[in-house]
Length: 477
Length: 160
Image (cartoon, rainbow over all chains, first blue to last red; front, side):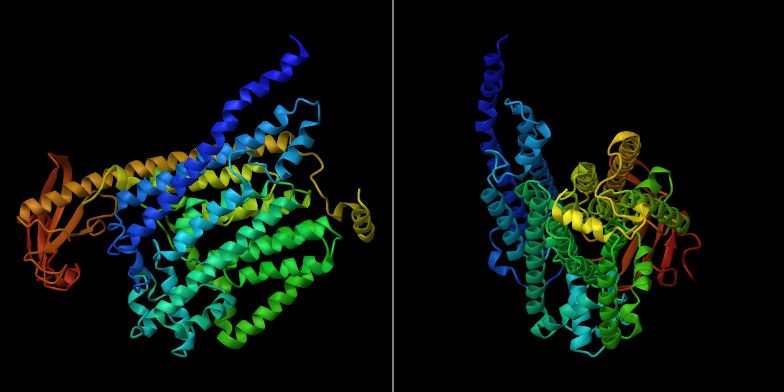
């Protein structure tokens, strides 16, 4: 066999996939947009168990869709998940072809690096501009529609109105304390007695929205979530590029993720704001590492983690990994300064309850949801549900995982990957698992070299989706 | 190594070697990676089995609830949609359910309600009624609210 034959063969074999890839990617992107649009338009028709009772903010969309039922929702969710998986596989396959197809005898790993960093890395499948258009379209469609699948946003508004309109401390009272307020009817029945578990920074961020009325505050919350999502995606892009990965792949993997779009942004969850702070911290440390190592940037990164924890405490788990990785004084000082500032402001506005995040976390850790893996495992072993001893076992397992990750980080393992694993472990061992919790590690998984984290995160999300489909297999009428 | 990395390295000279941060693990891959990956795959398989098992369990429950709803409608001769199903009163995971619904047309719970205790195998899309009780309008199914208990399942369930 001649050398010429060697070099010709891959080119001939490449012709068809190169032509098919854009068409296939385009079709998958259309399925994603159509699936999300179907959910939003049907949701706008109202009167659905999947759409919480809400002020009429999307009536201008009603009349296009029909009442959203479980069947349509689940079919759309499965179609979106399949299209998303197909799109990622297509893009990943295009990337993987790079080094192998290199017939000029260059170092495959170097070629891989260039391939990942090149702007046209998606090959012909989906251009970076196409990726941005797809993700922007999905975000805007959901923004225009009703609140999907969760009443949490009404709890956020209730806590804000409690403080601003009624002079009550949301860290000491549940929404029931403002039963006469117009927002009360929209708060989930499980939460009317529950005081806020969110950080004081988030509560203060929500206060300016309280005087806008329920509908105005709802739009404000949706806008906050959209901007936080846009910021998270921009920072994910930036971090991926800083680490030599394909930013467009990272953008699609986060911004077109069905759970991110439908559950996270659809419910206007404050997890998106927490993730923005998390990615700001990661971006600053990567910048610090790429340019001159700067104490100021590392201190700012640690302060961003604390700011994220003052939105939602979970993200605080990043801090020990960051500090252990850098082993400098700057991140410790940055974190301490931010903690001190947050504590002073939180105490001044909300009293001791406003800064007692540990109590709030302990309370939430006792909740049990049917979608949690803990519940599924309990059922697997013939138990009716999760018992206190199971909580203790899960906490012990989580501690073991965190210790292992800290040890690995000490030995030089990427702290961003370790943080992602920690967030994934928290969600998997939690007895209170909701769709937006398994989004936490996703942006981190896209900017780490340990691709097992991305595979594990997507696998957990896949299992979550599979667990939702029982109404499709056996509908109850 | 770049100049900036060298500068950073010099700044950390005061730290003992074992305390200095590392840019990467001493040996990437290898045995530890293989062990971790194996454990991850095993954990993934375990979670997948638990998820599929739970999905099957939920499908079974849904089939049972469909039979319960059909049984309630057959027994009362009311083709109502809003019927509450309680899976805890007769024991969580016991497969025994209590279904309550109005005795006359109206908003859910707004009329006198009849509650049926249903359990047993699904035969022709129905299960057996083993008794029940009545509830006044707008009253939840609490022991103090029950009256007119009937059948073996209703025995001892009414306060008077």
